[in-house]
Image 1 (cartoon, rainbow, N blue to C red):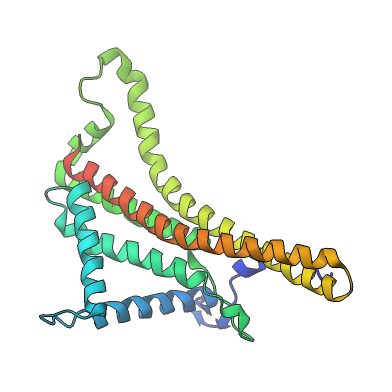
Image 2 (cartoon, rainbow, N blue to C red):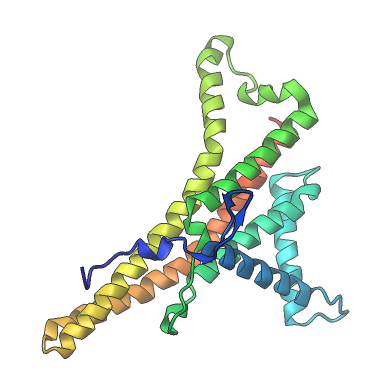
Length: 260
């Protein structure tokens, strides 16, 4: 029906290039395109910042600051033995950050262009979460063997209470990848839906105002103010969600490396 608001349309994955490989659909989609865009931007950011000048420029200073930020996160939250995980935490944090920021670029003001937020898809956030969780399990069993299961037995807990504590600790551990992926997915999806809804209200209110309804201009003004507020909040959420994802991953790695 003409004029209907469909805030979920922006999340639809569309084929840009149809491809089949051994009977499987491996088409190049808009989601894949924006992942490539994120990779190119991140690679360009690091390539431009790795000039190794004695007196660093702004770009090099930004890149060095980014590396120092992740190095500090790893040292504080993983501790000894955590240095080897710094490249992964760095890649995780900045991929999510760049993907979040690219997803809110106002490209829709140009004809035929529309951004796609890859982190608003549960498939993407779930892969990141389960990959991180897989690394935690691999590190834990590689370093401690079966002793890794002692992670579910709090030190000093009374033996009778272990019947309850161990299952609770195990369940909370297994829930980690789900909460990690869902948190990012929900936060990004909710923000984009709000922007779409208020954007539609603003357009419809403006059209109603030009058609002679004074209330239409009021609706447009309120909706436009909300768009500005939500956009500012989205910028903050983009950074916070990337930080939380990387922080929790480093904390889970701390458990795998040091147990209790």
